[in-house]
Length: 567
Image (cartoon, rainbow, N blue to C red; front, top):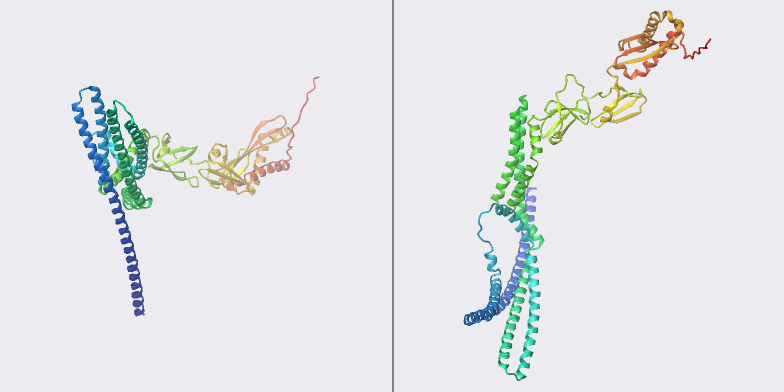
């Protein structure tokens, strides 16, 4: 079995090596062919460049001789008008010579001397130094469009050179016509006119050659730029960015977050050890934590800057510096708000750890005061959440009172609504409170609405109060005998209806002497355990009161209207 495995592995390896060798040979052949074509193109471009360069050198020699002649004429001239004309002509010829020199430099080396000596030594200036931070980024953006802008400029230059040639050809044709006409004309000033025309013809011929050379030079530069633009396409640029600056950016980001998480982890570990020893946060411990958090951000930023500096990536370093300065500026603008938050974090503000805080009418216990403060309400389902420290700015807390309730009700409590309906609390959260009536109907309140509603919690104990009246014919027994009889009968009946320990107290008192009856008030105090039987007990008391009247032959009057006639 092992022999077969070795044989198969050897075969696969041989095929792989053979395939790789053939592919490498093919790539090498393609590369040699491309290199040969490239060399042929460069040779042809070099021959064309040398031809144009020869013409430019001849033009330069002609322009230098013209300048030398003009300088001699300027020295010999005596009239001011003549001197000014010669100076203007000399200035124009000097400018043409400078342009020719630039063209020769650009055609020879592919770059002008102005570009080489572009940077100049400047004195130190703080504003300039700050601007220099943004310079690498601006140059990077500018470099991405440099080739396109140069191509556009060269196209405009070629178009301008063609127009100049057309103008020069028109001028040459006209001057040649004037020369032919002047030769046939018999004039006393024939020689002076002929000299002037010959001079102008020579100037326009030079201008035509200058424009033609400019066109040829620009076309060659345009071909080079278009070739460079074709080679440096978006894919190559993206690949180069990923390999260099993209990789540097990834390393910088990983350094920042790695340093940040490491320092945060040290802070968390210190906090765990601190709490494990049972210590409470003092002012100094909070101050150290706050300073450490500031140091964490600064340390992570500094490490990112050090890495970018080590990678010599000045563009990303400049961008990171500008971003840091922008964040510092925003921090200065937000200094009052940040100061208030820092005071809260130091447990010196209006909201303090271990106190009671009201938010939208709901009380909360400040369990832990931090950047994300932990609030709790033990009486609510889901009564544990965190809020940013900025949301506590402007609020106030106070120490909780002893045995102070955190909510008017608890889950499974029974309540009596304003309309007398009895319902059970089945859900109470920071947002909603849901009740279930006897029979199954559900009522849902917003928590803030529930707190503003007058609701009686009868799960802690309740009193059923009922008024009951008897006729005035029992007036002689109304103050002592009848209340005792009613009390005994109702008490005996309620003890059978509910457990005796759940009836805490029963009182029957004379309430008033009404217009038609002597009224009593029946008060039954019950334990909250039987709150769900509130309506049943209320009905049972009514039944027992009527039953007592029947048993003791007590008349229950009905409202009467008495009319007195005057005698």
